[in-house]
Image (cartoon, rainbow, N blue to C red):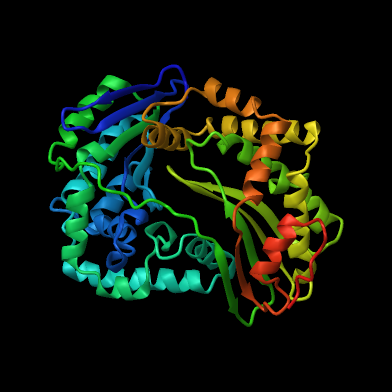
Length: 429
């Protein structure tokens, strides 16, 4: 973050963090709450996301229409999203409209009516959202991958929730969850752009004066298990995700795994793209990704390919993962580090990205992390670190998720064997 970043903890426990950008005419401001789908019980699966929808449906002071009209009258926009570890409500406005944005966000987070009639309508909307995800194979495959990696756990359940829990969701469940989790000590108000810290602290002190003094809730630990998910569907493509246990944000291997992911499948010059798509023409889309959480993580490779091609694609993914655990070239590492640094620095030109990054750093590390420190950690990743991270991956049990015409997709046991052996096992049933 920039040297001008400041953080103040209010009397009620809410933290206010600002990252001033004096050369812009806009500001992004929002509230990040340490409450996401991994804080839910099985019977209330999806309550975080449901609540994210419902607070926009009216407060004691504003109707749903008034909320939308007030922010758009000044040319701003208001949005929210739910993840497994947090929920965020944020706005982007011109610099003179920051107070309005904060007032609206404070209103929906403290005085939402959770009207029963609106709840019924929004239940239908969310059910449609779930069905849309179910009908989007290159979307739902990641939920199935997550569920297989963390079976029977909050971290493995989908953020949208299950249809049966959404159908049964009552106003009392929503209100109870909000009361338990939407407390000042678990909230961060972050702002980036044309903002002044003292003014933000004053606005937040006045606006968020009715939050409950909620303490941090117990979070179920993430216990990686791995395994296999297979679903036969009449599709044109097979969607496959092959993954292994990864690293949490505070793990020493976080940056080595990020570099490994980039050189393995992070761009057009990556090993997987060049070997599987460019050289062999077996896929349209293939990439690797690290998914990190506060205490654990995943490392995965996604491929969308044909029914016959998948028999060759999965062994090639195994080959490349195993090769990376043997050696990587300095040029590959240098290129991957440059990609990560460039993406990070380019994002810092956006007020929205800086706002979110600041909030997430406070949630994860309990402090703003200077840009120079992050760059230093990226630059410190060398060949030994990347190879060591790849070897760590291969020591774990794989997770395999496949959706579509899956008759030629490798079985889990064969994939596990192929990740360990240089001999290409018979990966087809």
